Image 1: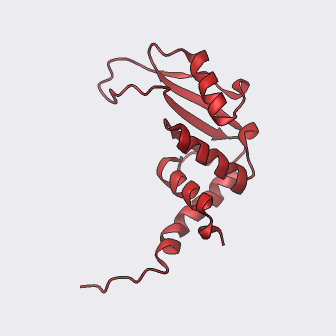
Image 2 (image 1 turned 135 degrees about the horizontal axis):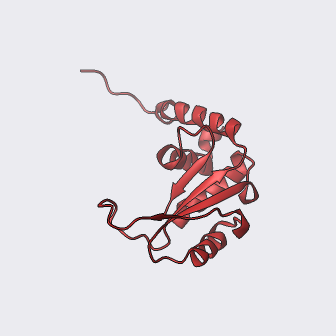
Length: 141
């Protein structure tokens, strides 16, 4: 049963929180390398789509070196550097998100993933019931 597998549970919850719900394909964005690695391991195991089927776009701040950051993220994720698309640079002075993230944000896109997106959507829809099925519900007031 999938809900008993810690990687399935962690990846599904991570996607629920940080994954795209509107693009009709699988996209996941985060600045935390560890969470990105969980997403990639989860995608590889449960969607059968590993780093060779992913592309990455970095969202960087002015002054960050795109070539260096691409190499950092490629080393951390296993996504080949040639699968990175042109980085997006956050303009200075926009007034929001003033925290400068050390290596920016990685937006991972799983190629040809419409079917996987629908599978994930079903998992997310089922997750609350799966998680609370064995927990007694409080009596209504």
